[in-house]
Length: 193
Image (tube, rainbow, N blue to C red; front, side, top):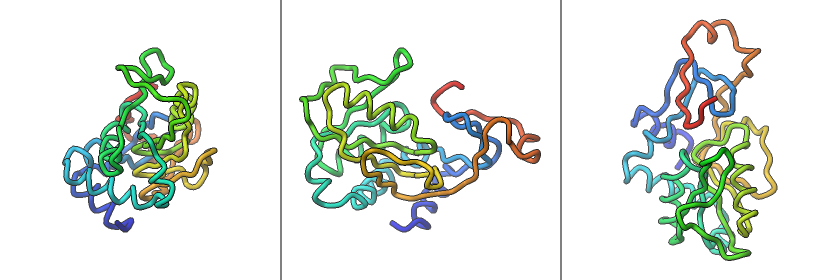
């Protein structure tokens, strides 16, 4: 899928929002991608996952043992990536503030893991998920996401494969432009901040 086709899917599902949003990273923006909306249609989610799978080099995708996503946002796209790759899909969650495998999910030491996110902005959640997976014995071989909105500012110790890169401006709390600050703030993400 081209960037325009991906954005068309977000627009068709009313998942591209405009206003004043505080992201889970703490940054503020005038645009928010509500990936849960774009993924609520199973056929659309499958189509996006298949397109994302094709961003990953063939030899790498054939070496993957399992797919793991951070809860909440990554669960649906991670599941669909698992389906597209023919691999088990699991997730890490933060019951006490730190990512961990729960619900009977386990890894065999050295298993090759693809981490799948919905959106990467600062990369913090991805790094935390990777750390938890490695501590559980997994060997993270790549990270994939529907959207990279980092503006190219994020680097990982593994290859990163986004379906689309969008560069909506973001600002820290103390640098919000006056026209954005005048709008009421929404916190649509899954973390309280």
